[in-house]
Amino acid sequence: MNKERIVIIGGGFAGMNLAKRLDVGMYDVKVIDRNNYHSFPPLFYQIASSALDVPSISFPFRREFKKSGGRIAYHMGHVKNIDLKNKVVTTSYEDVSYDRLVIAAGSTNNFFGMDGLGQNVFCIKTSAEASHTRDEILDRLERGCIEKDAERRKELLSFLVIGGGPAGVEIAGALGEMKRDVLPREYPELNADDLSITLVEGSGRLLSAFDPELSRKAEKYLGELMVDIRLNTVMKGYADKMVSFADGHKEYWETLIWTAGVMGEPIPGLPDAFMGRGGRILVDEMNKVIGADDVYAIGDIALMKTEDYPDGHPQVAQPAIQQARNLAANLNNPGRRHPFRYKDKGTMATVGRNRAIAQIGKMTFSGRLAWWLWMLIHLISILGVRTKITVLLNWIWNYCTYSTSLRLLMRPVKFPLRRHWGD
Ligand SMILES: Cc1cc2nc3c(=O)[nH]c(=O)nc-3n(C[C@H](O)[C@H](O)[C@H](O)COP(=O)(O)OP(=O)(O)OC[C@H]3O[C@@H](n4cnc5c(N)ncnc54)[C@H](O)[C@@H]3O)c2cc1C
Image (cartoon, rainbow, N blue to C red):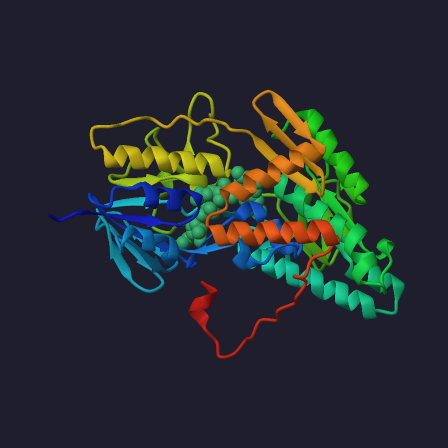
């Protein structure tokens, strides 16, 4: 019997969960991803701050799909086009035909059209970006240690984090811990005052998706970690190392860490009519792309407008996982057409050691309890026993020593050029 071919673009939370649940007796499943590993974005900020390294939170697709006895295939490739008429996906390496297509390509940085911003700021939206940010921080710390001029040293060691959502708060907190705990232990040439961290947020409070009381707690925690917070401050542009703000004033900053915006990962070939707000693909309640046959979108890239979520579901892990599960159940049982209903299991963010906030239904937690909860939930969610053990060991080590052994600055090698690696 000829099985239907299902091609899944993206092996993140949504794509991976779907692939593992599809009935491989019914379908030939192929996952296309530009990386040969599944990663864990909630801990990217720990890569940027040297608390974890990339392999600790990455898991090779081939290893995971081996369990299917070769019935889930992985193809490496960056998707360059979708030909809906002929049902073909074109990647950087090949054309792949499908009977049904599931787009689970996630989201990317949104620079809101600011000229050249993407080329000049550091981001933490992928493990590669987080590693690049880590290298910049480490490079600046080392250069700061040998810089004789005090003013120049401060310029080198001033970090501006844009965006007061969970990612911005987490990276600002991690830098604050570096200033408070790592600098005195490992960089004796530097004073804590040499390093400054400023967190800028456009609205009137941090973590606007959380209860206001938890936002205040996060501000307090960041204050304890010597992070300077500026609320109601909107950045408008960045050129020649000058940051322009909405009120018209400009400031000199060399290192910007951008966490302020996300948008759906652009996938060429889809008509504009398919796209909704934030570059997300409009889907119905079964995650079928509105206007296309046999094409679905799940996870961050999907925009499902419902009564409860008129602007779509939050771009976090749980909707991606739950949509994948519902779609797999529908596809595995052709008579089943269950609409997706999101079950909000709560949200959390960490600011640093013993400092986290969590909101589960009407209950709110903060401080040490929330921090332990945050660690437990993240440990459970990471794929693979090896990765869980590595992360746990690193955390125990960091907790006991107030330091990390991962502050290695790996300089990239330029030649021989491999242009396709830049895709
Ligand atoms: C720094 C950071 C912190 C976060 N913290 C949290 C948190 O604490 N809690 C939480 O719930 N959520 C958090 N999130 C959000 C969460 O990670 C996302 O909601 C979730 O990853 C969405 O899953 P997804 O499968 O839709 O996309 P992703 O997990 O992003 O997966 C998309 C996959 O598609 C691949 N891909 C993309 N484009 C292409 C292409 N053109 N060709 C081939 N492959 C492609 C990518 O390589 C990737 O593997 C965080 C995200 C970030 C960036």
